[in-house]
Length: 446
Image 1 (cartoon, rainbow, N blue to C red):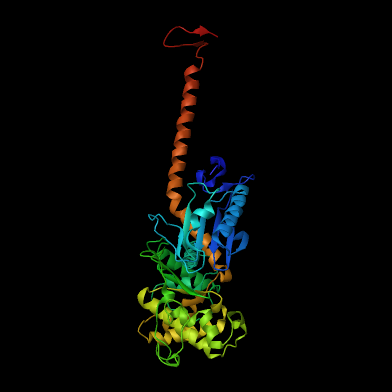
Image 2 (cartoon, rainbow, N blue to C red):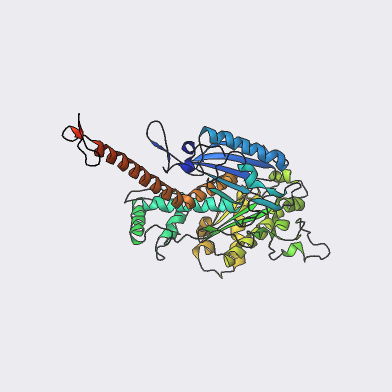
């Protein structure tokens, strides 16, 4: 809206912005994360996790909150234009691009946030019409970011060329032949390998080209546990959309015996206002606080040996087991305030293996060291949401890249034809032997 073509990177035929020094600058991504208490807006350069600027706004009414975000984005875009925008928000949201309410929060239980055109309001007044834009839930977006980070690790490994490089054990285990078993070497993801391991990786690189058609890594689940429980899914390299979007936090799993039968006298009553004893109602922050007899703000002071954590681990592990059986993820990433407690994650791993009962035969869910690679904390920590929004921007730009390449090719052809015409005219008018000929008539001597 009102942007000149020259200042808009979405209209620029170059893939990167060129600085005054002549060097190519990395692409700029804009991201917006909508939360129940805070909205965050940020700018990243290069990869989505390289945040260079950010601002938080308290969640008030849509009429107050979203225009403030749009104003911040407008100022940042005017200073240095973005290549794409990503928006991730609490929901439920409409993800159907053919729907008249695409980009809306639809029937959110949060007061005042029902039927809100989030995408339209954050773009209003500054966003160029052809800017690539991604929109998704605040749990699908972190799943996209985690998936993209693993894919980048594959790309980095593909560039090894015989050199030693720190590469995650998780990526190595997916890349190697099935006969290669390195699970005995315990350690967290990100450990560097010795030269022998690097040579093994180089051998794997030669055996299998690194492209989307051949990647062994296809499916990832992201679970967040806070006030609510949310699940984001990437399957076949794509975030899952369809009838709506994943709402696996509202599934039911087997109740703990100590919680009693649903509806029976003395049984634990879950806190979900819709389903009562779904996973969110039994393991969300409000449910854990109810078990502890405290407020949610006091949960950090509850000791690790309190039985409430065992109950939460049981229900989250039940969710993970359901995802393993239905979606077959190759990694489950855990985020949210409740899951920052490390002892809780260990409890979930133990309970997951027990609940699967040995039916799924894979080192990732049968062995302790495999579970450390399979069920992990988010690499982005408390920034998972905003990095996810920025990853949506990167993904939207990547999807639109063929359009920009086509535009680049057309621009170059037009420039070529224009230049050819100018040169032809100059050659036609060039004085030969001291005279100019027009339509074959004798020319005038110069």
